[in-house]
Length: 305
Image (cartoon, rainbow, N blue to C red; front, top):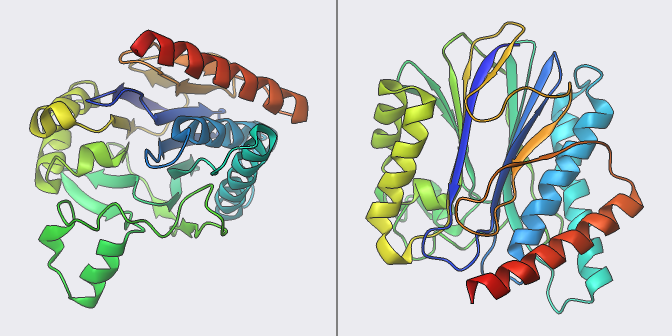
């Protein structure tokens, strides 16, 4: 495989960055994941982190060197992350379970399959044209489907943050899995949180991605979202790749390491560096990771006060 990748996240006007993103790869498979912890629920950033770790662990277990049954993998990974979030909540005896949206894309053999829960988005772009986009699991999206409100209200309607599917809810998440998309060299995949797409019109996203390399386009889009939102900006996060389709990884942000590595952002303050999370997770690993996350959050909270 050959692809270029760039990822960036900003805390915006919030006290904590609850967005998480990362990618894993072997010589024949690439996994992209972005999660947006839901700010209305306690420890949304922990839910997002657990989701990334769960996807990473399952990918490392099953990508030998590619994933058999990619659609099933994506659905089962979402459900496994949902269970791990509930497990964390039970261990911590929380009054409410942390929740997160998620979008993930698996690319292998020049084919892409993606899945999502909530309103974190994936855009598939080719030559400045939108080939496909995920549909938000939100109340306003249902209203648009019924013709009750126009599509132009998608980013501004007061009900746009009312979601009916996410990880960590009391009911099982609705996991929407795409069909298989055949990629060509030059195709782009953009995963982003609602802090980006709610502030930047889709036409501007397409124009910027088409006119610049991903190394320049992603920061430009994030800055546009931050400027437009102002002091009340949500966390703004994006992960993008340019697909080339050969045998070498060219990372714009992080050099290639092991055959299967989750390169992820776990920023608890603005502009914190990316970290590398590798290896499988058993029960003890998950409990240790949860303890480390809790300590990091507590330290971050003290710093941000």
